[in-house]
Image: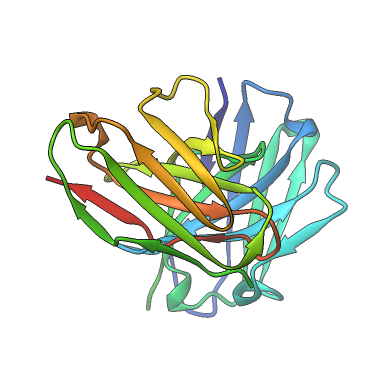
Length: 115
Length: 106
């Protein structure tokens, strides 16, 4: 079974930084695209970023370009999202997801941007 | 960007009802469309991918169809466990986008 566990969420001040981590198990991590998807409180879902199998290709939604960086460590079966210059509108539950033609989701990490 | 518009936003139904949710894309796309079910406080779960392929383990009362700009999710006979919010999602082109969701309640 695909198992994805996020960590690193919490309260951060506007303009601050935060790093989310996701540890994967139950599948060969290095064989899959991985993604971050977020959901603002009582809102819909927003795809944030993708990374290919070897980390050489990355894609972002416009609203986070230049502020967020997706990365992975295949030796550690881990996915990361470095969030910088965060804004109130980045407040959301952030899901780590495996891409297999569709998303398999982790349980989510809550990020709150507030002073 | 491909905008995905779901209808209806909310749907009141009864056990045993046939339910149809529509997702319209702002431009024609290939069948890189998935449907997810989300319950309160939980992560979404995939139901259908590539527009019409039922994910393993998902009850056969769920089905997907469509092409081009219009896609549908059908629940043939609504069960108590199906009261939830449903989202469509396209991966035909970046940025990948979701519909705004359809809440199915009693």
